[in-house]
Image (tube, rainbow, N blue to C red; front, side, top):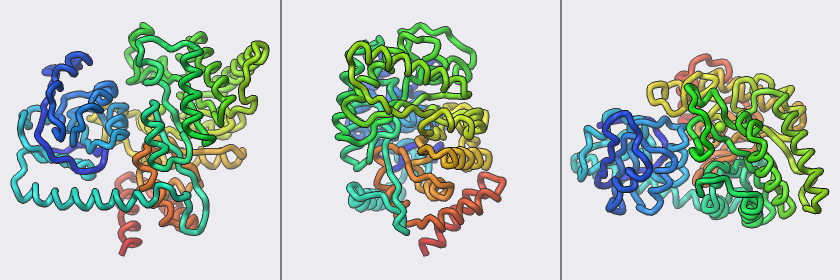
Length: 461
Ligand code: PEP
Ligand code: MG
């Protein structure tokens, strides 16, 4: 048996298709496409490395699981696998050596176990587990079109993370109450060039109209880190996650940024939109952006375009500096959304795509929990809305803690809407606050997890 990081729940049983880059060089998209051609439906893909783009290519193959040797549970590749609902385990050392093409493989996306050539008892056990998992998914369907209400009647909202038109359809199907994070990197890189203002306005308008009056928060381009747009020919950096990423790149490429902001503003005439800025570290950045948006609004008005003059402009709180400065930033922002994926990587100094430091990438690290609490407290004190849009908001073990800190808005993967809604329905605010109070006193990640498990077990019995 092999094991790795849990990425996407569910149990996949199938025949292995092994794709190895044979060395340190990552395969090109073309090489990957030719390597997976002929892969049978129901196969389990075993790969040495997967970029988000490669995961997107798997849509056509209806595979039953993914095992990847590298990645990290919060890498954008892992998030793509999760959003497609494919059971997946990443960071599985030696997978492409231990597993051969044609082997039967079981991927347990809940425990992180991967069984190569399992015996008949293990297959029988997992067939039963898979049935139970599918039955739970059926039960969860009952939560799709319910309101999100905690056990004491406190209302919450569950919005979704989306990145393309197809995922917007998933948001609607799964009962999401809006889009809390629309990542625009995929949308704007598909053609090998940045779409012009008219094209972007059309896409944003389509999303807003599909959401029929529900809120759509569009995050401006977050290029850099593990997301590159090769056609922009950006300088290669030694530390891309600490470099020219997100708002820094946008402020440096005014033409691209202005086009995107004009398009979002124009689309805001047709529905409820907000603008979210990624990778903010300081108050100056928000001030610069607000004055740029002010200038753009003046131009649009002069040109006779309609837009929502009250459009909200907020920040993703995902850097240590932003979280520490949340009280001051709250005075510059209309809302916050806490990006736990990056917050964890930056606070713990642990690259979100590096399997060797995956053990540090945990939202229940006390430092992370304290910063989340400080951010929520600061937003509340300033009277602005706060949500959590990182993967932590989709984790049913963590959701009660976030609720205990005062979070009432969760932006999750569409496939997690019902599960998070059910979890919230099982907790009162008082119980969630009690849990949050207790865990803030515990200084060790694993002890916090043990405490949570004990509380959950006691509540179930
Ligand atoms: C985050 O960092 O938590 C986040 C939501 O953004 P992304 O995963 O796209 O970096
Ligand atoms: Mg981020």
